[in-house]
Image (cartoon, rainbow, N blue to C red):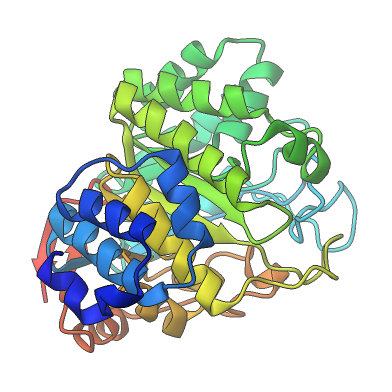
Amino acid sequence: MNSELLLINPLHISDELKAISSKVLSRQRISSGDALHLYQSNNLALLGVLATHAKQHLSGNYVYFNRNFHIEPTNICINHCKFCSYRRRKGQNGAWECSIEEMVEDVKKFTAKGATEVHIVGGVHPDRDINFYTDLITSIRKAGPKLNIKAFTAVEIDQMCEKGNISIEEGLKRLKDAGLESMPGGGAEIFDEELRAKICPDKTGSNEWLRIHAVAHKMGIPTNSTMLYGLLENYEQRVDHLNRLRELQDQTGGFNAFIPLKFRRENNEYSKVKESTLIEDLKNYAVSRIFLDNIPHLKAYWPMIGKQAAQLSLNFGVDDLDGTIDDTTKIYSMAGGDDKPTASREELVALIKELNLVPAERDTLYNILQIW
């Protein structure tokens, strides 16, 4: 038994867990069945050891963050996702539609404060097509020529291309030519088709989400990936989701990071569903890190789970705390997350150093800008 496991007391580890642990510690790929067994295990300490081993192989003792801000062009959306606390109809109280001019002003404001990335995600607007969004990207590129523009989920791209009557390939080419450099991973939710039809019935389907990311990767546009967890899914459905991501990454190598997104229940149709516990959150990070051996980074999105939980996740395979945010997103605050999500560089550095890890300020593509 590897010396790392002596800390856990191997006498209390089942033969199945010993076999899986041996695979992880010798850097062998685990199977979907192995991942399911890890999810079903209550040995959280062992999962932390294994996930930390997997993480250190990929990124050593570094924990990454960046200086970023969000732009949310609109919360008006054609979809009817039952878990969403963000969506509004046109004309409904609380709805907004930002103009390009308003968004450019935000770019000027935050680039002046040192931001290196803008993250653009919003509702799937019924009227805005590919032309609006290429104009937006072009305008942002002019206002922030050194800013990395990470923009639009596959779901948004699907709609803007359909509205503009062009293919995904042509739409992504136009966005890239305008200045799009990378894509976030939202809209994946859960890939299981039966559950997806229940919780987000009119959203872009699982296979199309994966295809859009594959097209982006082929065009040299790196993306992130996500999974909504803690709603109605079971462990088998989580493993299936992770496996589809791993299979695509084997083909393209285009995913930079995986971000588990915790279901938050305020102000949506699933308000009676009990949210996942911190133990379950940490288990999910650990299994994700162990299984997704080909996706280099695992991110804890602190506006969703809180800074303390995000710090704890650093002992369960996480190597990225996202960024400073600067109170520019409402998606999770409207569902019960951090009400005013902002963190200074100094605060993130302190969270990381408290665990004797190495804070690494990065750009969007994980090039290190400064070691703290």
